[in-house]
Image (tube, rainbow, N blue to C red; front, side, top):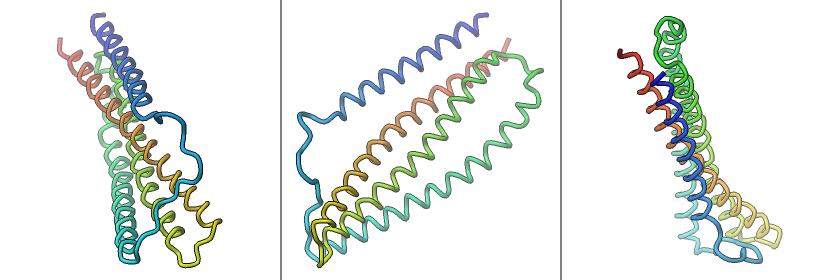
Length: 189
């Protein structure tokens, strides 16, 4: 009975942490004052600086996609060997099954938000590169500037989504590890 009370306290603390963290992030990253009017377009650059920035965005995009591609098989390949023996013996191992179930759920949320966060971070670089390309074309017109502003705004939204997903992942992995520890401690009698 004591372990169930501890589990409830830890789940409650995790929920409070998520709510407080969300509120803090919402206040910290909220726009100050009125939103700017007009188009937000990256500045036109010299040809040398344009090539340098474009190369940077392409390299960062490649790096982030490579990390994303590595993460997906790692998660899929690593989850099965760990989970299958525990699932087979779940009825005989005892302990606080609620702590184990919520811990696994939090770890799954952490993995899902980490994978999604990696993908969203790659969108930042591809969107900024597209905005840069539109602005720095020799034949750039108003339509291209509007499209560049849309790409730039998409990059900003992807950055916010990445930050939120990384925060969720951090809170969930810590909560999942704590609850897994509670489960392990509940096995000790």
